[in-house]
Image (cartoon, rainbow, N blue to C red):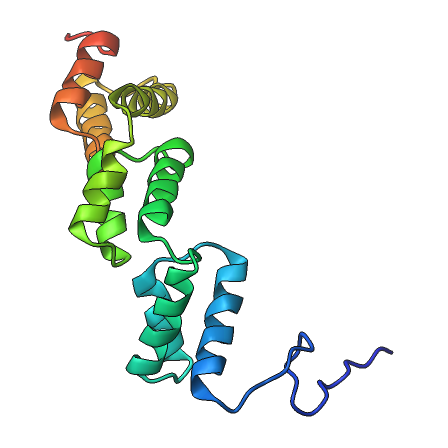
Length: 173
């Protein structure tokens, strides 16, 4: 039987010194959150508020980390946009919605979206279309088109791109 050791007084689970100063605690909590993955300013502020830090203290801690280059909304938004486009197979519209939902400013969203190439979006949509088309062998042509159209629109691909793919891969019967 193994027992967990309790942290020593004045230290947290990781053995780091715990301060009574709220600004030091907020900064420490923010650093801990950033150690898992990059986060946006809005997400850090929300998580710090969830941990019980007041707004002013949380903003001061995040400002200090941003001035040190540890919080960069532009970099995080670009990283998230490229990851969503590559792995999740999402289109520009859906990626922009996700970034806005996560609290990124409109300017940051548009800058992140400008980094995505139309060729990559076309490739992701085509891959998704062909993968789903292979699962619909016995379906009537009109139902197949309707289902594929709905799928691609929900994933954030534009109508022009969808119809371009339909012209290329679906025969009108």
